[in-house]
Amino acid sequence: MSIEITGVTKRFGDFVALEDVSVSIPSGQLTALLGPSGGGKSTLLRIIAGLEYADAGTVGIEGLDATHLPARKRGVGFVFQHYAAFKHLSVRRNIAFGLEIRKRPKDEIRHRVDELLALVHLEQFAERLPAQLSGGQRQRMALARALAVEPKVLLLDEPFGALDAKVRKELREWLRRLHDEVHVTTVFVTHDQEEALEVADEIVVINEGRVEQIGSPDQLYDEPANDFVMRFLGPVTQLGDLLVRPHDVTLTTGADDPDAVAGRVARVVRVGFEVRVEVSTGEQVVLATMTRTEFLRLGVDAGTTVSVRVVPGAPVVPVSGSSVRSGLEVPAR
Amino acid sequence: MSEAAAGTVRRRRPPATTAGGRLTRVSGLGLGVAMLWFSLLVLIPLAAVVATAVAGGWDGFWRAVTNDQTAAAIQLTVGTALLVTVVNVVMGTLIAWVLVRDRFAGQRALEVLIDVPFALPTIVAGLVLLSLYGPDSPLGLDVANSRAAVFLAFLFVTLPFVVRTVQPVLAELDREVEEAAASLGASRFTTFRRIILPALAPAIAAGAALSFARGVSEYGSLVLLSGNLPMQTEVTSVRILSSIENDNLDNAAAVATVLLAISFAVIVALDVIQRRVGRRG
Figure 1 (cartoon, rainbow over the protein chains, first blue to last red):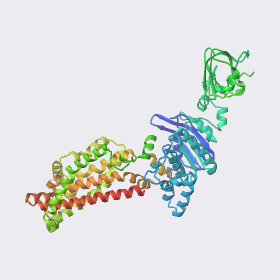
Figure 2 (figure 1 turned 90 degrees about the vertical axis):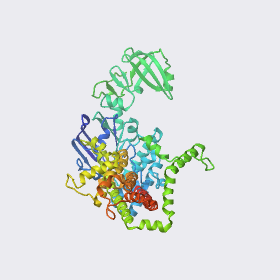
Figure 3 (figure 1 turned 135 degrees about the horizontal axis):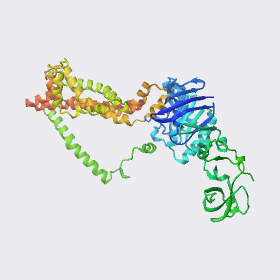
Figure 4 (figure 1 turned 180 degrees about the vertical axis):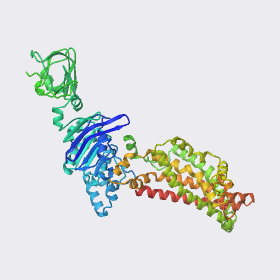
């Protein structure tokens, strides 16, 4: 394990940012800390970096107790949401900063910076000032700057949060490829579940200062530990007292399935390739999503009577419970 | 923040000129008004001073400024003003740092007190200094009629300049930049020298220029305490006044011209230093 966090608690005045958090982050992987704003994930990242200190608990980095080490001695690279560029220095000097203060030979610095500039595709911008770069370019510069000192772990705090949607998507694909090249243990904070599911090897879901679940994207999506994780990782709808993904809800017409719930189609909305069908079962409105082809085959419209059921094996979670219930417990056909 | 960052990408808007490089009507009018205002208030009076100074010919001018008593006054004034400026650069930055970065009891009070030397009529400041550091000093510190009195008076009146120019810039500095430097392995001192100082340099230089200019021109706060002893504690402003009182206008203008040239040189030098520091990092 590369980063070992044990029993970390952090308070800001009365506000409990983290409560008895323990997480092990494996070496060489890309791990996401995922959760809503104010849930404590950034605080955890800053505690790993040494930019904040835990009130209780310990932080180990690569087998070394780093709990009381200052940031500059931890050997971590940190990338900030708002780039934190050194405004008065050129891109080249920004990237070289960590090497210059380590008094490395000039030739070595030049060589290393050239390598990094190529890695982040900023070769032709080397002599520009950060103010002359776009947001995405600035963030790539910040990443190169953090990588220059060959950190043991790379920490990214909402690295793409300040960028527009298109650049954000490009950059996260690029980050994934970069990680496959560089293989440094990387932890990044995000509140965007799509970003975490797409990029990370492992996801730590953090909410209200506690770890809700740790697992691979597949595990989290298919076996959510509780209704919070279920809700956070994607759209959900409620059928009876179960939470289920709308695409795991099927509608049938005519068949008198004893386990299905009868309902009436209340509304049909088409968004591109996807059709959202709202079914009123009397006491609640269930959302079912399907492709347009499926919808046409079903042949329903507002007012049609349908049977609603959950696809066998689909992940479901009891609404206010916290235990996992296997999809197999759902009434099977 | 992201918007601000995006805004700085094209911070320098192109000047309002037409394709032919001529000014548009509005910007032409603006420039005209600014130049007229500047000319009436600054250029014409300054030119008049220089003209009066050289009216008596180069010899007259040279004789006036190399007069022993005058030369001593210029030396004392400029030397002390430079020294005070150096002290202010260090102390002013330090005070600004404390005001911005620390939280302590009485901070608000200190915040207000900083401006007192600024707000006080200088002759009142002179009275205060005389009663505190004069012959009847309750502190047992008597600097009256000495060069230390000049230094002290300059120090008193120029205190707010660097503090007030550095403070807002320091408050606006992005703390994450310092954290980034720390995570890259920089010590607090290295971070200050290579990251914070370059960002503060323009503000410090502006404060230093104001501080120097104020020192060179100071009169009211030191006349009482310094004793105005020729060759010892007489400053240029006092010297100029006595020249005028003796109806020697050429002499006064000559001294003023020298001061003008020195002040100009200092302001240019400060700008050069500021640019160097700002780029170095």
